[in-house]
Image (cartoon, helix red, strand yellow):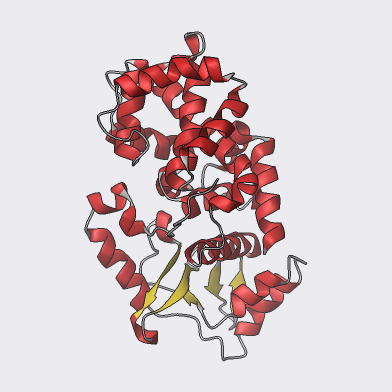
Length: 312
């Protein structure tokens, strides 16, 4: 059963976002920066480049929507904030989709625009998923569609932990980390109730309920706080479970960004960021460390990305 009172989160709910108050100004600067005028003929160059790729026509609706703002800040936005949804003070605080097109649209010396269509399409897919999530259209009720994303997250997270602590040399350690990572994904990022989360996590690692019971004992013995409440408590759980003295939140974040790219950092606690990480790799724009993400996630990345794009 899914959580009854699902409330879409924002960056403001993220531990990492709140560690750096300057992020508020970064986003506001992006919101207030100059944008591409969709009312001029040159905008047709951009529309044409997307049309000729023969992508899902609904992506054109995302591109041309008055709620989609193609911003061109003086300095490119930090990579995690190339695509974001926020209230627009210039439009009565309505929620708008902001896309920094610095890496995919430039002005031609002959007039008009030059477009990197692959990257722009990646941003439009990300924009659609961000808007759908903020509108409550991607919820725990989407569990069957999110299972591939959960597997991707668990593989990516477990790879980071193995990179830091070499846990794969210990019998069953990788399966334990995968199990815990799937539960964190569903109970935190997707806000799913525990019973359903446990059921999916068991299935992912091929455990019986009896096998899961040994993990329950460890969770209860360490349960000063809900271990899946946020990324801090989850990292503490992993630290205690695998006795990784060197593991802390800062080290995890640094390793994650090193392996997968700085633009993926919020994927460890914000569902739209994880979805973007996966679909960016699928579309092939080399926005992040695409080859590494592809290698680790494999078919699950393809399955999730296809299912998400089919919803657009």
